[in-house]
Image 1: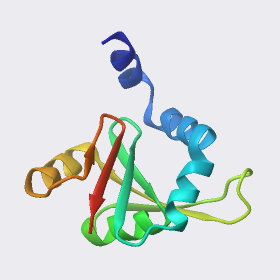
Image 2: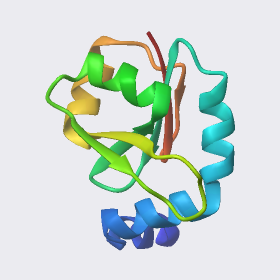
Image 3: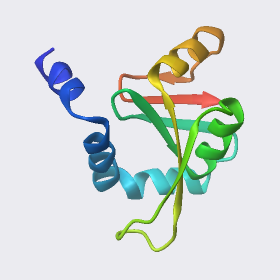
Length: 109
């Protein structure tokens, strides 16, 4: 319970930077083979998707925010799309999530 509360208190931007620092290789490996899924990662008030997942997320949420990222640790620009937690919760009420964890969600398109 305490860890969950502490996680919620960390600003979204810091959570995003921690996610990229700790899991970028894993995320990019997953996206390399991705064709019909949306892998979402929690950054607090927002959920983010990268590369192929980002494209699929944008199609499902046209009002989402798109951001190109240029990271020192990765040689090519990365596309990231984010949606609010509220938007994702609304979507999840009408769709089945393949995985529904506190910091990771998997949707099929």
